[in-house]
Image (cartoon, rainbow, N blue to C red; front, side, top):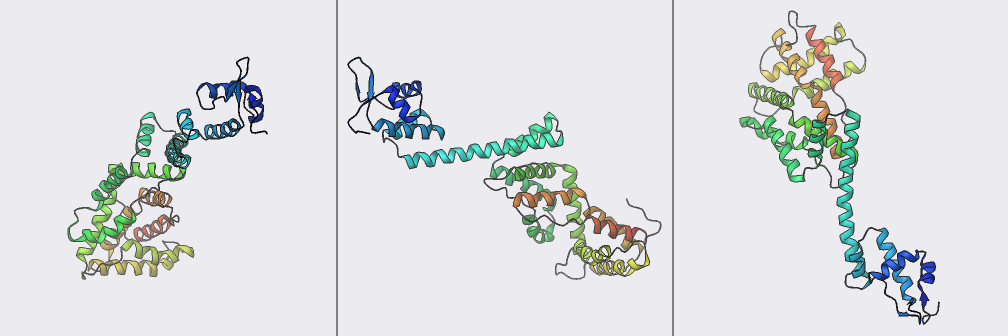
Length: 317
């Protein structure tokens, strides 16, 4: 194209792939001004108008408003700065859309009531500080005020803290919402609190001041092999496994193995085996991007059954 050649609006539209109406719209708003007019008064444009309109079209497709576009093409604003600001704004919009998508998906899958939907929406919209306060309140209700034993739970509390990333996937948002709902459940809070109090009492009754392994972890390690090889919990073959973890519990409490101790241990394991606790840990793994935890319900079910058949006259509370 000749740099001195002027083009009528129809030719300019043809060369840019825009409609005459669109070119006229941009021209009327001063974004692409005519270089001259024909003797009949028609607008004429120079070669720079083609490049200018190409830029305008690109910026419009990227979502910039006309006021900003005019300042960019007039070099009143730096394009990189505008692009950076617009990218930041889009990131916020994308995050909001992900949150909405996650809530709507959860509503559809769970068949939620309007009240539940409102709660899920509110939980999904919480800021990072608000999320931390919500979880902090839950963990404090579960583990706070346990006296000398409180510091021992610091690591447990950290390991139970969700950290939703800045740009979460829909699955992570859904997991966060369900986890937050669980943490607000008074009955679940009370259940976790009882587990913490059980462990605190065990530590207090032990003969040593050195922190010992939680009995649930011991049972998992010692009863797991029996479950793996298919030993019936009521059979004599289960006796050595039961004797191993009950002996550990007896040592932990500083009292002899017997019916009362086995009944107490069965009750303890039933509390640990609360399905809501396992669900919390599963959701936590999704939110934090961790490997999904192995389900311990089967080994706890096996252990409780093995203990109950060996405690005649006792039933689950």
